[in-house]
Amino acid sequence: MRVLLEILKLISQPHSSVTDLEEVRRAQLLSILSLLQLFFVLIGFNLGAELRPFFITYGIIAILSYILSRTKFYSVGAYLLVYFLVSFAYIRILAGDVPSIELAIGSSVYISLALASALLTSGNFLILIILTALATFAAPYYSNVPSNELDNPFRAGGWILALGLVLYAINLFRARLDKRNFNELLRANAQLKDAKSTLESRVDERTKELEVSLKQLESRAGRLQAASEISQTISLNMTQKFDDLLTESADVIARKTGHYHVGIFIVDQNNKYVTLKAVNRASPGGQAMLARQHQLKIGGTGVVGYAAQSGTLRMALDTGADAVFFNNPDLPQTHSEVALPLKVGTRVLGVLDIQSLQSAAFEREDIVIFETLANQIALIIQASSGAATTKTSNMASASVTQWNREERAQGYSYSPDGSIGTLASTGNAATHQVFASGETVLLDKPTHNASPTLAVPVKFRDAIIGVIQIEASEEARKWSEDEVSLAQAVSERAGLALENARLFEEAEKNAEREKILSAITSRIGESNKLENILQTAIQELGRSLGASRTFIQIKPPASNGDGADERGPA
Image (cartoon, rainbow, N blue to C red; front, side, top):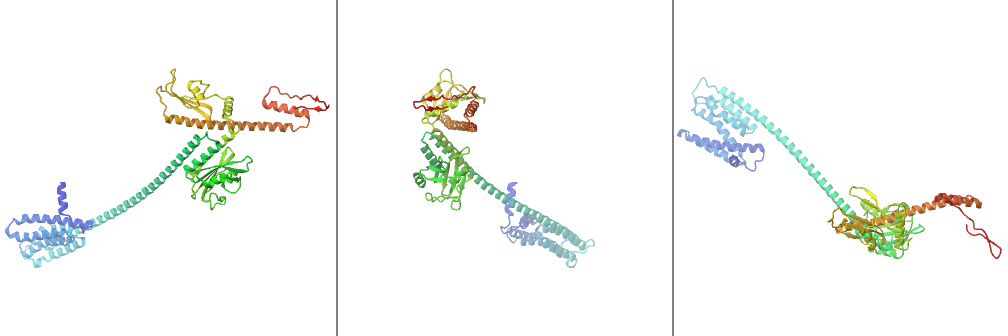
């Protein structure tokens, strides 16, 4: 069946210039009807010798119609075939070789009109109906058919008009229906095109949004990676001298973020100026400023002075247009600058100054990362300030030991069930080895049925202040390099955090002591009598220290050689 349809499509394919759907349908129908007429011609050719001239003419007409159906002049072939079939009946009436007029018309005209309604346009079909009806009504005047009382040409003409008008009405209805369907199809196609265009537009928009989001995620991931690498580099260089550590911090920030100048200022003892203490090595202007001990007044002109005074971030995205910006001749290429206060609590210890060659170089994600780095540098400065009060690392270790003894557990333990408990001194082999060597200890095959153990020292400035010990649940556990590195990184940050906490508590204690001293001094100063002063002193001191008994004794006067009285200290 499929092969038959393909053959039928091949033999009825219209000319390429015929593109209208209705015209294509008529041309294909003409091709098929012409081939069917040839089939009838072959049958009729064998009916008798007297009919052969007619069938030869009929065959020639059918062949011409088929040939024309495959060209752009297919409508000529349709007229030729239809008018031949219709006129055949009237030719026979004229020749008088039929019994009656109605019989001649009924044998071919009605079928011819039905075919014509499918092959001709509505207007041409209406013309054919009128001509056929006139030829039928005029048949008595040219007919050579013998007269017959039952023969009524007017009746035949009426049937032709009726049949023609019905077919014409059907054609009009079908044409309108096809037109409506075609218009609906056009509207549907237009809607599909609009939907496709809208969908493509939305896809393009979503694609662009996804590309922007992807770039933002990649940029954010790059910033976070840079921040992580900066923090790791700073942590790994904690054993360096203070000035070298600040220089290394500025250098790694500049290198990872791509900004050409990074400077670290520290507030002086009088809290009036900030002094440049470190810059990245790739900043010639910064090195020149560092060599001459560049200072800026707190609260003065510039983003650094503003940040040092206000304790808040100050940013100039276009330094040429920002009124707060101070034109620095050492850094003439700066187009963007941000200054972040280095604070611990509310106390400003210094300023982190970052300058870029580009305008509007700093985004919100950059500022978040810079603030994190500024907090880390502030902790380094605070730790250095606290360490300056001790001469050696042993003194720092002693202070931490003393801090640990103040009503604290010596350690904590974590169990797989999520519970955390206090821990007394372990005294195991791994801990002793760590305190003895100061290095990380791995016990993959411990003795006495113990678990594989990883022990990492917690240090601050080369002083061991604790041990992190991890025991595996599997006896065949092997500690990987990544696991050891992770434990060491945690211990480094824990050491720095412990030192910061110790310094903070010392500062709180000092503040409380100064408060008590100020209150006692104020009460003592309220009286001018010696007895009242002594009584107030021992009363307030005993109350503050929670003593069971407090007393004060005046040294008795002693006589010297000159006979003068000497009063000793109370």
